[in-house]
Figure 1 (tube, one colour):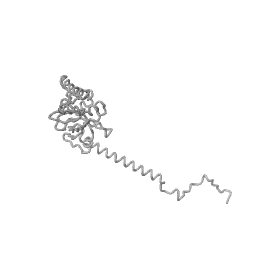
Figure 2 (cartoon, one colour):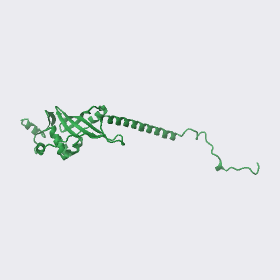
Figure 3 (cartoon, one colour):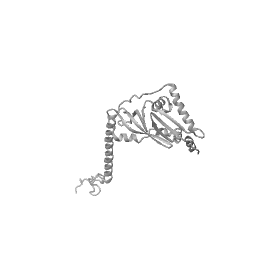
Figure 4 (cartoon, one colour):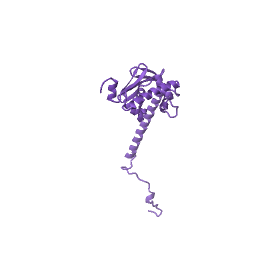
Length: 246
């Protein structure tokens, strides 16, 4: 060896791959990460496709602006008569002992209440009762804002004729959508079923006063052009109304 031989230090040596531990195939951890990434990307793509399809469905039967719903204010005298019947009904079922009571309301009565009553202000301009059909159908004209599906597009509105089915029980009453009709447009079945599962009265059942009155309800039905609510708070009151001795 000559005196000019080059000495290579250990830290200067090029790395040598171990054929067992450092092959060209990614380690197991990397494989797992890649698989998970592919899985979540697949879910994301599927979600976008489903959301896009749903958005197209909703756009096919909704509008960019709310429909004009009649607001039927009535006269001060008409409003006073309606409120008087309601107050009398509530006084009877709240008396001690409770008295049997019956309340009859027409579609026009409900429309006037919605137009004037603060408690029903959230319904104003969104619903108009058009007809009652025995034994349990309430027909309405509605406009409802839809949830945003595509955030970059304007909110859509459902402008439709909606039929509600009255579902009374002892101590409870519910209103469920029975049918949705949009002029010249087809409403998908899955959308209708979603609406049919929602009780229109559910938000009001969080109010203890409303819930307390419901507990005293015995029956409800449609007769002629009137919605009829009937209540007997005690067996004694029921027997008295039927002319029986307890």
